[in-house]
Amino acid sequence: MRIGSAACSLALLMLAACGGGSSSGGGLGSGDLLVGVLAPFSGADAGLGPAYYAACLAAAPAINNNGGVGGRHVKCQQFDTRGEPADAAPAASSMVAGNSNLMAVIGCTSDEASAVAYFHRLVPADIYDAYAMVGWALYGPSPAPFKKAALVFGNDIGSQSFVEPATNAFTKLGGQVKNFPITLGASDYRTEVTQVIAYKPDVIFTEALGSAGTFMGEYKTLNGGTVTPFIGTSATIDPQWFKQVSDAIGVDNLVKNYGGVDLGYTFSGPAYTEFQTNLNAAASQFADAPKYKQRGSTLHLYDGIIMTALAMIATNSHDPTVYNSKIKEIANGTSGATVVHTYKEGVDALKANKSIKFEGAGGANSFDDHNNSVAGYILVKYDATGGEVKVKELTPDQTSKISQAGGI
Image 1 (cartoon, helix red, strand yellow):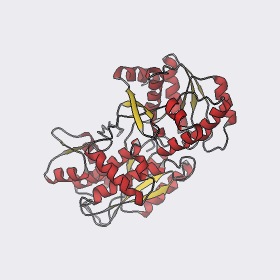
Image 2 (tube, rainbow, N blue to C red):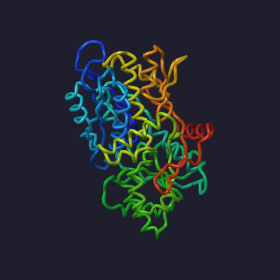
Image 3 (cartoon, rainbow, N blue to C red):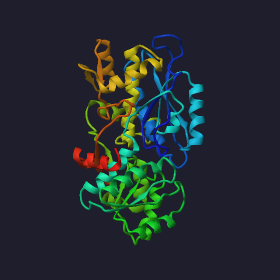
Image 4 (cartoon, rainbow, N blue to C red):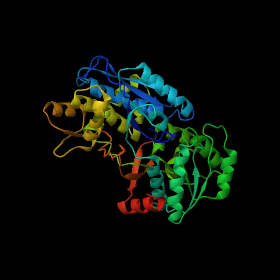
């Protein structure tokens, strides 16, 4: 089963068919449980792995401090895919073969998903990020609307998955687009930057994880110190991305000229409070963990791990073939379900023989028939500290127009 993007802008919760326990038969088993963090920790996409690892480090104590999964404690382990398809599959295979106690795997690409039996996509697919960027360009605050866009994404297949939907939607709604693919991880982009400047765009769509700082820094230099407005995917709401780009073009230029797209988070409530508390405490294991307090994928994967643990409790099973379907039920809820926000609330409700609907740190999930969570987008900017600031929300009518123009 292959899904997603090699650019790793997704957040996937995956279950290995053999995972779950040290004992055979029913029940929750015994011994520690493992969450495998299968993501790039080196290579051009190395900035992605830490966001997923931080999610696990925050989720583990939320579970362990409240009885664990039937007394079993959750631990986290990194498995480096290096951001390369050729490395992802063997890393995943080794992880599954060497750890019979896997309860879940969190990651972000089709290569990772291919090594496991079941998956839940916790954020919308890349195509929706592309449409949201078009929405910013057409309906965002001043200096939008924009009419001429340069697309600057990696030349790998995954990164280029943003290009076609953005091009289709933007051109059919009256815009002009040209694609300028770059090799992620290169040390110099003068040739590509010169080509983009010559095109004279009034906006740049980009992600370029690990390379945006280099590209935008050279763009500013070769463009006479001026930075063209640029719009980033939801993956650019990231502390490492912010640091790399702000170091290259200056914080003021980034705050003034950057626009991003994200899902509608509140960053508040009991679930978020617990998430942030655990994330801060995780600094003793991973110093940068607290920086991911507003990273969408970190929030959703945190929720995904907790929903998996609750599904195991609800089914009294460590067998993924048994508890997999319960994850979707807990996320979407059933008629009369009790809404819970934390692992403890969920366990207490299940012990009282109640059905539950989990709305966690990232808010509610709504999985469709293909296990993709569907949600609306907001338009955001950065403040000077790297915090996310909501500036507008796309209306249902605007979203519908873009989707229809793009081909959905």
